Length: 342
Image (cartoon, rainbow, N blue to C red; front, top):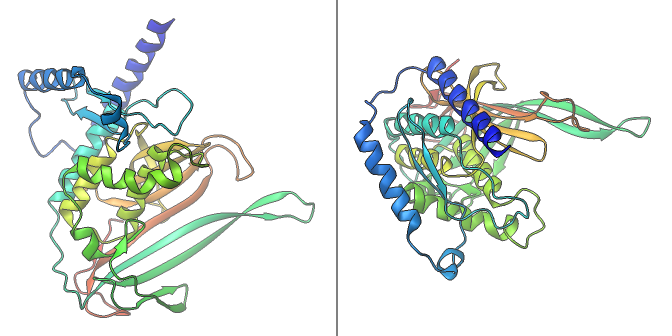
């Protein structure tokens, strides 16, 4: 029986990768040779075989996955070093080969983007449109989903030291200064200080996620899923320096349970490919333009029926329409803002 399941899993993996290869443009760099891949795989296996003490693995708990990205015709070796200790179930599977390959290509694109010249006196600018579902009580006492749509513009001080501004559907309000910010609400200056090594960056993300979502917490999500959500929120809600953005995508490829989705739609109606993670009956997607591989937005989709709707229904979706660095909060035509693909 175990062989049957393994064969089926491998068939799904190869099928997923073939579909992505058909949908996406060719990679910008040549793939490594088979001999180079074999050498990398041997190093990884040797590293995994080294003895480790329990204290060394648990002193700073992390759900890290060492992944060797390989050519389309070869299998990716993925080894989970420290599974999510917050879960009482079997350790989650590593990110799929297709999602690792897709995130690797996205990371290369992110790294090649121009660096925004940002002074502390300036502001980051972000324009989004979002569909959100809430549950409210119907006259018969049942809970019914209600969908709302909002277009938002937000200006945040580069260093966080001054008040920002938000406009949402014609309503304007000041945003408080946040000083340096945090991973949950980062300023551009904070993001520019983050490590560009994916492993070091992922350690920071897990350290932030563990207190409320790790072992011993009341969270049903777990640290792995919270890490995926936290990285997605940063990428969607912030203007991110290119090298840091690239490292965030590579870090996400090390999170167990990440998969590829061949078609997803953002709040602006734009189709793209996605990487995603499933938790508690919902699939959380990051959506990318098929051609440019730039982030279009995010979406949360039901994978089982619930009070929120039926399988396939959107619970939340956000489209990133423009972002950049501007000189003043409220600037109508942000100089240097980048319009996302339509």
